[in-house]
Length: 224
Ligand SMILES: CC(C)(COP(=O)(O)OP(=O)(O)OC[C@H]1O[C@@H](n2cnc3c(N)ncnc32)[C@H](O)[C@@H]1OP(=O)(O)O)[C@@H](O)C(=O)NCCC(=O)NCCS
Image (cartoon, rainbow, N blue to C red; front, side, top):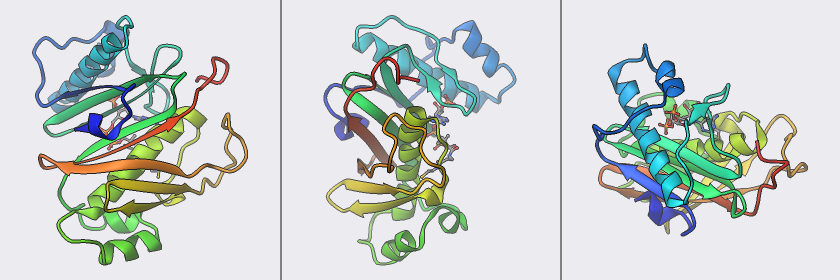
């Protein structure tokens, strides 16, 4: 599903179940040694997906360890993103010579729990959702789009972003745009004003998917 939202050069690997042969490197296993089984499984399977994605790019397998804010750390000159929810795990990886930013997210296609929309949405987003075309849980898609924005933005800039620091507009054709309004000035390779990001969305198989891929290269000095 997610591969339909991303350019051809992106290696996307998805899993609907947890393959018994999926294994962790010792450094990875140490991070989930005391975690509940659900967390261990999603963590292990999504890394299995990541290693298959590395293979598709012709690269050797490597541990996928988190940075201090949880972002996955990739081998040099790669950009990538991970997501997992009940019954679904996915990894997307690309050469940093092709993409500067990459973020993916999958969510169950059900309404958000009470109170969450108010916490994550800006007034214009809430207003649009009230009159949006029926049949789609736009509140859940909004949440997913903001997660994709964050997963694309943070690894590139090293900057965290609150939910209300991005304003998302959906187009029923399957595209969305996100206007970023970070409170801190971006210590980003780009400097200057935060760019608008554009992404794609899709609902299918009971899940809501969003993805952002920004073309352009991260040069070796800028790569995190
Ligand atoms: C980190 C976060 C984005 C994860 O999203 P989620 O929908 O809860 O969970 P998903 O299963 O889709 O994704 C989890 C993966 O995200 C990745 N991730 C975690 N922190 C990340 C970060 N700072 N940057 C990029 N990716 C990150 C990790 O690979 C993680 O999987 P892992 O822990 O097994 O390695 C979310 O929990 C969070 O903290 N959000 C707050 C910030 C935010 O979203 N702001 C919105 C700005 S508009």
